[in-house]
Image (cartoon, one colour):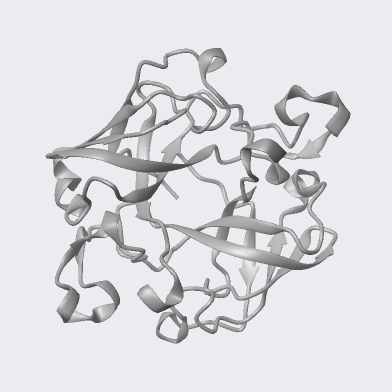
Length: 133
Length: 133
């Protein structure tokens, strides 16, 4: 099961310790820069769309199964699958973003906590209600 | 970027043509059977939890960039990243499920459209509102 990078995040965030835990906790806007080879896969995406972005968190540790969520000891130790920790066996990042602008194979998105250079592996639309699909 | 299977889906669904497009479109309940090696990563997950399950859709085609969503020609051809088609460069399935029962390293979940034997690659909790994190 091999993932291929289909693009990269372009962001002012460069250090893991500077990144908010979630996008809505003060993360900057960022560009999603897709490879030309997959650009036609973006057809139909427009400004205002809400997307789920999947990334490969290449600075994560993969041998971690227990964490203290948000470093808050009062919450105790939890299994990683019950947390959003980037450290986990398959460090796939899942980010909900709003598209601000589409510029060819580049999407400008609001509030993304992923670091500059993070590989993009997939993009999906939010699911609409069952009546609207 | 190599994914490792951390478990498998156990489901009565065995044929892609029998699988609903989304879990809430009549998919059966299923078991998520995790490898013992990652079982402690599940600590804290209880019945009633809502999870995001990430799978590897091993029957998908990876060289598809344009599709007709849900086979409905009136909607025209769309880029795969603007659809939930399983056929896409990195065929990661994203499924929102409710936990019905926890039995050691096995989670029984409601309404899962993934096929029997599908590799599990990650599980994450739904994000709570910013005040509750």
